[in-house]
Image (cartoon, rainbow, N blue to C red; front, side, top):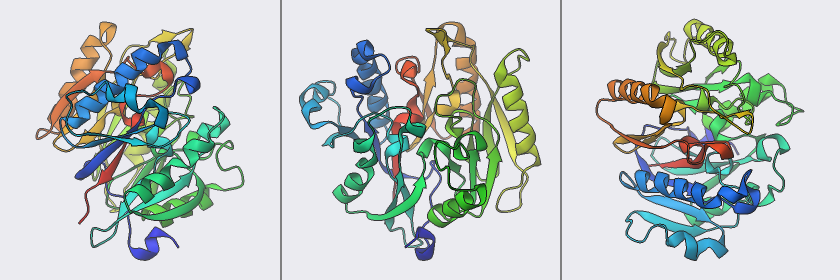
Length: 343
């Protein structure tokens, strides 16, 4: 059974949410385990920011219930849900929620292999989505495809945005062609057109997740992070992606309106480039939670907030410290997964 057969489709992220899911970091799986307390503080900040707008459910290992609850002594709208997991990026191993024409909710359970087998073990993470769907009584569709939520965006009108660097990487689905992957996306998310960008940001260990470089702001409208320095590898990457977007048409036959957001200045840690992205923001009910980076990025922080406020005048821009968890490889959007509001 496939969602398309029952008229299920993935709503855009700006559609109303019932709740947001995040999973709590696991010290044993962290790249820098000595930073566990600082990273936990960063996750708490993100969860509290989202809880200003909508309910939050935190997935956490059963042994962590007591210490995690201590981060939220007076925070309404935060629920703790013990489910054993290996790592903390719920966008990528959680379910992708879909709605049918009557507003009934279902969830797509993708296969998960820790970004191409980069971080073992991942067996617990691969089993989280079914448990979440069972906990909330949500119908489940099992997709025979390795897929991460951060590797795709939809516009709610039949168009999906992704990158070749990630979805065609042989470490995900080596036995599937581009055409077969497209067919699965169409069957499980009910889209009719896929816009393939070439690459994601330089140094992105997810192999080019689209949620760091571009997203839909509305049907027919795309935000993209850009670079103006020809010496920066992101310059060639973003110029190529801009050409693709300007030439593309969406599922409704429209040319796209492109809204650029200037990237923050390059930052490194341990001689490794950090994947700083304003596009890793997250839509919440009535707002946007935006990572900002401070220091040398103060100017681009303000510009990003300004562009988003102009693009979404009816939403409150809520900023959080984007440096708090970035060394672990992701940011606000990577930590979250929305449950759309049905009927």
